Image (tube, rainbow, N blue to C red; front, side):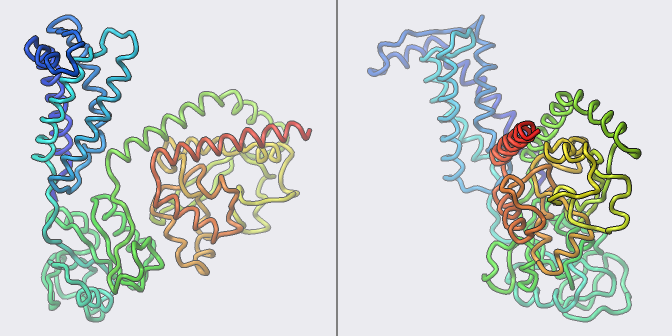
Length: 471
């Protein structure tokens, strides 16, 4: 497994170098004369900035080209033709951006002759760079079987035609057999048809050392600790995870009718996607906390004056891959309101008139202001702005008993809002909520997040206005 850092550094550094070279060459008198010698461009005037504004031109062009070529900085296996065509499309996009900048009276804008020459040069040089450094598509797969159930692991070995180089399992578990008394050290060989590479605790090390690109998951039951821990490792390293069709209802399967071995529809977590989404989350949370600071103070005073008890209300909620974290809200009920009633649906899912809810609490719930403390969970990295709304672990277990696909929601971080929330679907209708959450997981992007946030903010404003009118 080749680290993506070398590719990213080479791609970004090469793009900066090529852009600098292209703009510099495009500004030379010879190139300017060649451009204006073309019949359709003969009316243009040569413009050479060898000094003066040249550095500004280079910086402007480099920034726009880097933004346009951003998708190409992700290490992806591509064919030569596909790589070249994608680069050309992005160069045209960069040229469009540079032309748009040219309409403004800005000293760093590129003259038309320079823009044309720069675009042609980048169109010739950039594809060569990315074709050279591209990740070649693999001719064959290197797979391992990971699990704790010998029979299931054995069925996977029999059903797959991938080159399986070994298996990872607890001591005593052998593909095709029942668990036995451990007789081998972690990392030794076994009596199975493939060697034992280690235990579950050393999975990440095995993935890297053996350059694994496919993992076959053979667990007796997909529980939170082992099954989702393995999925998390695959997610982290960009490795394809496959399961036996018996587990197709537990994961997001690409095609549940494709045979005994099914590919999970789990997109590898890419560093660029993570950085952009995390930047969006942090920016949104910080801005909201600063803007709402006076509101936070007012809510704190109101809660203190109305009823004794803490200002904040905390609960454990389910996070990514079945882990848990603490969520905070402004307290909207009397203290220990749930002590006598036991676990119910999430606070945001409860409807109607509840006598346990305080007067301030009704205002907070109606205007959604009780959710403000969750912005801290976003800053801490426990939540995202957009994602499936988290439930209590005990409620997750209860829903899962009737909806086996419920764990599919755990592939991404929980969010302040999500596709289900903006469509007014709550935990009272778990089937509908699950459909919306899976739809988001499959289609998630910054554009989708922005649309969901805009719709949610619009609903919050609308609810607040309606509340004020009703008073």
